[in-house]
Image (cartoon, rainbow over all chains, first blue to last red):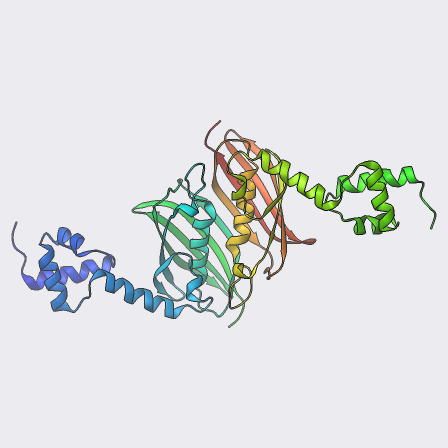
Length: 185
Length: 185
């Protein structure tokens, strides 16, 4: 395969990271068809921290923005947040979250992740849940990493219409539409 | 006021207890306009145990019937259960269930009570939640006693349509419609 010039490769690297914030160096190496070491050197030159540091920075910024609750009240690990717009969290299904008989995750954990993420995103001092329409698409098992993405789709007065979609890898396992109501300014 | 003959009064007492299983002796005394002691003597003669014992018996029978989960997995206190038909549970809102900022109960606790009650009621070895449409009618505060009543309204093949209504005293604070799916015979 033809070698791509360094400048072009570094532009592609930045482009890939804009699309997929959580790509590891190994994944970037595969995507750009270069060695992991090349990726590391490129990141160094471009001043892009490694994945763990990028995640930590994002999470820190995300937590600092929350207005409706204390950041510890988000169920799961908050990964990214654009106040009033969108948010991402991750929840790992631990043994205490599954039914002992079937080892299937109890539905209220997926609900709690989605609901708390939706509320955390609201740009108001207080918000409560009004309505939720939810769909469980496939049973979730122990050990699964649930990535929830929440998005404000509409605002009408003090009502926020929020959609949350939860995936395991690329498979959607749960979705919820919330109407949240802010109680203050 | 005219004194009601004993036999008639005891019939009324039994009637009241059929309507309202959880009436205390004090409440029965007010309803029948007699003293609490009269109620106690009537219960003794009729062989009706006191409220605490009635509740305990019911709960014990309820727990024994559950098929979809272990009885400890019901969120809240299971009070009554008619397998495949209806169920009642009580959840007291404790300090760990509220948002620290607003002291309003976190929505997923009301959801968990309703969802686990709905699942516990299903007459099948395994059931999962498919869909839920839920409505929070008023914020719930610390100390509140949430009484959830679940009812199977329709069964289509392996799909169970269940409604849950949650009250504090006589005020409805939450309702949910679930479609649950049984996975085995």
